[in-house]
Image (tube, rainbow, N blue to C red; front, side, top):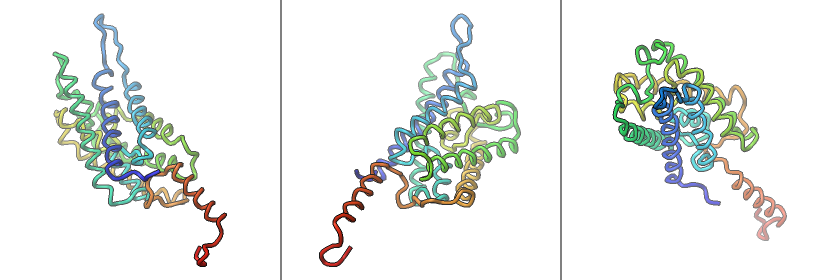
Length: 274
């Protein structure tokens, strides 16, 4: 089985980030406050939006994780690089691709939402914010603390779930459920970012102060991810470094083990070389 090329990995990151923003922010825009014609509320509310974000990551990790690592988030890529789970050289390309994926998803949400006559994008694109733009009116410092802490926890879960010592096959589930819980905690605080690409994807369509506050939703998640990426090996040890092979693939592992077994069975090379 061939290792994914860089173009394969970037395609996976683009689609995964697009899906995350479309599924998460799209559910907030279209379904959070939906009201039927008779006035009965059918909206999914905060809980539904939190679940939608978690499901996008859960499905994305299982679909694309073995191709790109399933980051879909510049903060995750930074934390993974600091923890030596991905090569530093891919970080700029991953970040650019993730932001573009988020922006394209934001554009799709904007275009679809324009199909409703009484809808306006200003303040209605599920943008992140603090102060007057926080759903609960939380201050800048409260939002920064929440975003740093929650992004750090998110990275620790990701690194632990994808550690070579962790049970295989459950990473998508634990990561998706963690993102759901993070949203349940922090939608009232900041509308939940923990992902600069998610914030960027809708901020410029939303307007209403969101672009001016976007810096906070780059700074805080990156700081939280950096702390977690640096701390993880010291807190929990390191079983292997994946910088040279950032995407774990059980099939590749099996092929390598089989090749090693055949080499052992064949004995030394006739020339005396192993």
